[in-house]
Image (cartoon, rainbow, N blue to C red; front, side):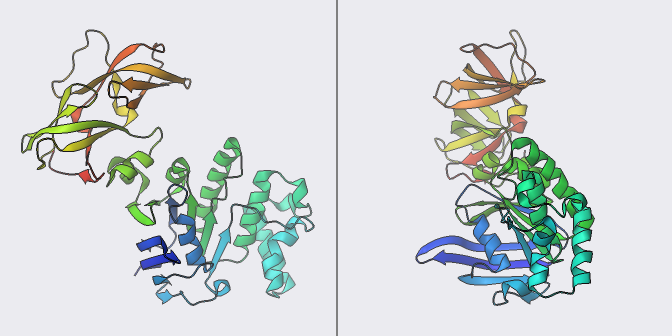
Length: 367
């Protein structure tokens, strides 16, 4: 059995289902990130693990012990919230030690744990300051220190970096990874930012509509998504989708007509009826601009579009193309000398294409 085991977990508020049949196994010491759009149920799942919400059905177990009815204070979890929730009239030392003092722990133990946490979080010189004298990143470290001194079995983070500016978020992500490396404790982290999820996670749980869409290592989800939602959500810039209709499907591959014009033969052996609608998925980095007179492989997927937006990012550019069927795709390229309104041909190898049926399910077959 895994260190943290969630089985058939459901949560409803009155008649409204928030979480449906959640099954997860988290190993000891893993850094697992729950990611998904607002309202997908990820924070509710975190709150049920720590005991702030009660499951409607299903079980949560830590080290083989079901904790559904265990008091939150006795579960061995510590939570860091989006809000720092620091007491403004208390010093950093007093804020970090507050939980231990309320539990009437010995003064020597309190000082030992606070000083240890402060050393880990580089707060030693700030212990006598009050929150009003701290930066946003320092306040967040104090909130994390308050969790560290409890020496929990599981750390739970609910979007702890969302109040920080972009530069500080990057810095705090690095600090969280260092903290995980030092402590070796199981950490579960909630965010709606998939870039944050991919940079932090040992494993990602992608959620939508109260269900787990896919669970695995970040690059596995990026390279091998189970459905169109995961494919479009994981990765920045996000995956492009080209609408198409099936012409023929069989052992020789999947031949389609593209809604934006042209045709493609994808080396995927599947059975689909002629006329069935599918979506072809391509990452922006897999698409390249076709130069005048450039020869392409016979099976290349090619479309033509007009440049609707150019994002120059320094070493590279990101072109947004408006296609004939009114859809848009993004192309990552190296400082391409395009202008707004230019007509541009782009192509990608057919072997890079992922195919999704009309319901959004990934179609798999032998390439």
